[in-house]
Image 1 (cartoon, rainbow, N blue to C red):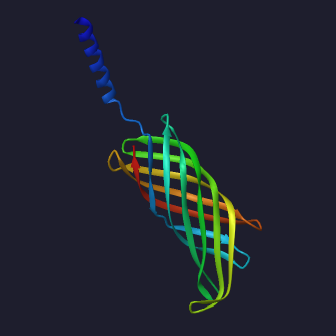
Image 2 (spheres, one colour):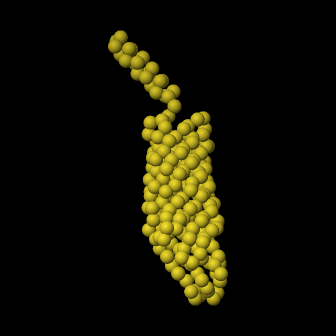
Image 3 (cartoon, rainbow, N blue to C red):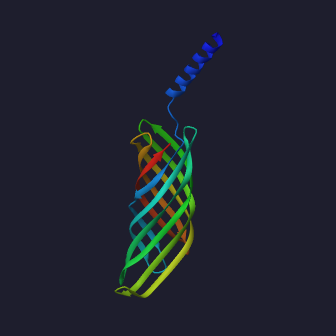
Amino acid sequence: MKKWFFLFVVSTYSLFLYANEPKKDIYSGGMLFYQPGYTVAHNPHQEITGLSNSIGGILRFYFWDYFTCGIYGGSQKTHYNTLNSTNSYMNLGYGGVFAGGVLKTGKFRFVLSLFAGKGAITNLHIESENQSILQNAFLYKYGVFVFSPIFSTDYMLTSKISLTTQVICLTTQIPDEKHFINPTFQIGILFNR
């Protein structure tokens, strides 16, 4: 009988200790739905600058107390004007992996990481058009490697849902030694476990 009582006390004490431990993050992921940015790029015809809009997502896995890695991707689209058209655009679709550090304090989680992945740039450059008919246009497609730092701040709305803000600067090199740079501010919702 004493053995059973002793096992009961030890088991109850162990469960009590485990229940009071703060839960460690396993993963978080979700949609980055509002992403205004600014693009600086070139094509064979002109320098391209302008505001970009995009959509994307992120999935983070947490290891130990201060390390994260995962997958990240999205699509950035920039419309720009040429001499005789307002319908030209440059689009960067990208996806890859990232790794970095995490600091969690109270309801906030801060993440600083580096992203590397593959992507594709599609550039429709319209020199002239007549209403909806293209008269002189060029379509360029490039496969690229994309790099970016990622700085994220997550605010825990509940233990399962957090609001995230991120600052990134997508960087790649397109043919002829031209650079594509796109600093972007991102807002999204993450689901946590």
